[in-house]
Image (tube, rainbow, N blue to C red; front, side, top):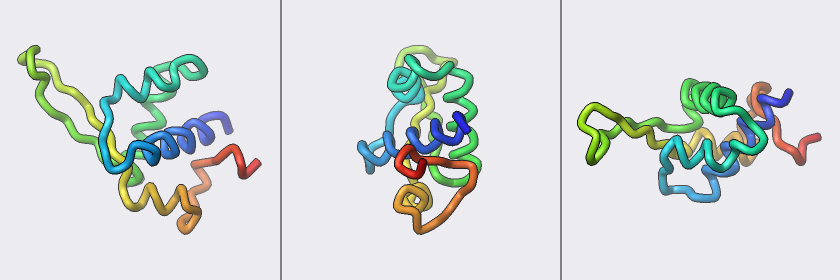
Length: 96
């Protein structure tokens, strides 16, 4: 159940900055006090695979062989937040 809440929190976080995108490191920084980085990465992978967030890889401006991951909420992700689409793998605090 804890992971489901993390997914909901990430969607809510991305909704607050929508339509902008944010680096993966920024999402990890926002949640690292309560969640391990691997938990956050798994939650992002789930949300990406379901189409609720878009993941974009760009080249690092200085480090030639490094990529930066950017995440952005999708319209499907907004539907989940607005509860017009239900996903049993995502929970929100106010639902409890």
